[in-house]
Amino acid sequence: GEFFDVLCFERMNQMRLLVAIGILVAVLAGAWVLFNRSAAPIMLPVAKGDSVASWYFTGAYSNNSELEAKAQAEIADMRSLIGNSEEFTDYQLYIQIATQYELLGDGAQAYAFLNKAAAIDPVHTGLAWANLGELMERLGAFNTGRIAYAKAVEAQSSVMGYHTARLAFLIQHFSNDTEAVEGAFGEAQAKFGDAPQILQLKAQWLTSLKKFSEAIMVWRQMRAQVAAEMQPSIDREIEWLQRKL
Image (cartoon, rainbow, N blue to C red; front, side):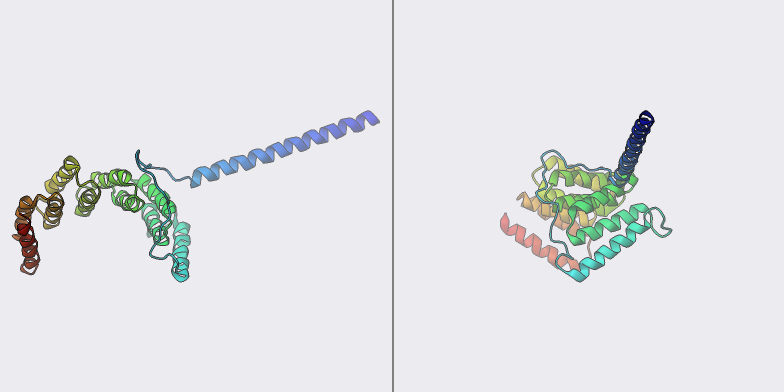
C-alpha cells in the first residue's frame, strides 16, 4: 500500500546517500594518496631572512620553442623512468629533471626535484645540496644557499669542487664574515692542503678585503706550484697588487 511505497522510497534515498558518501570518501582518499605521492619533501627550506621574489628566471632554453620542447620531452622521459630504471637511480633522475627545469627557467620545479634527490641521500651524497646552493644563489636566497653549500661539503668532504664552490659563494656574498670564510678555507686546506685552486680563491678574497700584502704572499705560494705557462699571469697579479701598497 501507500505506507510500503513511502518506506521503499525512503530506503532508496538512504541507499543513494550512502553510495554518494562512499564515492566522496573514495575520491578524497585517492586525492590524499595522490597528494602525498607527489608532494616533494622539503630538505632545504628557505632560511630565515631570505625571500624569493620570483621562482622563475630566464633559463638557457627560455623563449626558444624548439629547446623548450626538447627539455619538456626529456622531463617526460625521465619522469617515466622513476622507480623502474636499470640505468639510472632515482637520485640521478631527480637531478637530471631539475637540470632541465633550470634550463627552462622554472626554479620552483627545480627546487622541488632537488629536494626529492636530497631526501634520498642527505648524508653521504653532496650533488643535490651543491645544486640547491647554486639554485638558491641564483634566486637571491643567499642564507639558504649558504646552508646548502655547507651540506654539500659535509656530505662529501673529499670532493674539492664542493669546497671551492662554497668558498667562491662565501667570498661573493659573505666576504666580510671573516670567521665563516676562514673556517671554510680551513676545512678545504685540511683535506687538500695548499692546492692552487684554493690558494687562488684565498688570494682573491684577501684582495677584496684590501689585504694586499697577504694576497701577494698567497699568490707567490701558488706560483711555486703551477706550471710555467701560468706563472706570467700570476706575476701580473702580484705587480698590480704591489702598486696598491
